[in-house]
Image (cartoon, rainbow, N blue to C red; front, top):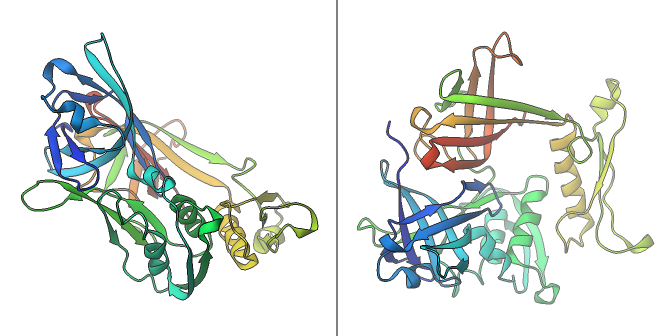
Length: 360
């Protein structure tokens, strides 16, 4: 398998159409993505090798940068340029954020939805961004879960804040924004907004395996029961003060406490704008499910050319396997299946850094 060589394209943000190839563009740090969240990256564009239309292809607010893995011909990252600086230096530097960030610049409007599928709720909330926005296309098949949801334009809720609220509740849908070719002729790109009960492919025996020693050069298993990461009793609080402040029921890990665990209490306020006690209960229930036994997160560095190929063999939200034959932490070896919640990629350094969360 060859190295990850990226072809960079500067595109029109409204249509996704390619404006210029950008062969002299290079990230000055890692590219990254996270499930249901935006990430940012920094870039340098060497002017000596830039096409005549480089300015139009990288204008902040008007363009979209897309990276395509030349070996697989798959787009793997997209970002919106947000700032640009240059002068007497031989290159231009600028920063960009993945398309999820745009959703924090658009507001929901008013929507009252009664017993609608979660996917339909997300699609309704996305309505304003689908008009006069980037080339978003909805990929939101029915989840089979019905819900009530109400948001008023006067609430000043951004689309991003509402999506975070929906995904943060018990049984809430997961979402992400991907990038794909718009057509077989490769004239541009679209940004599918994927909505699923769980993003990616989940398997107890995934085909993508990262081994140590092998493609993995170093790894860390971080286990935590720190404040904010572990709790046996969770309460979600709404906005406000005093007796008028809405609160959920206290959700308690009764089985753990009956087995001898002491009580650890976590109180938090979910995304702003939650005014329904039932929604607060759902947020508290999901938080307890995630926190009751703490967190187990695998982070590692792997050699890109020897690893399962990002975008082809695995992607954001997929389960992958990490197999340790022997290490100081695991002298007898270890095998774990965990979900890829985020990744970082440095193609020039042949370095890949998945972030895997064990959910069992």
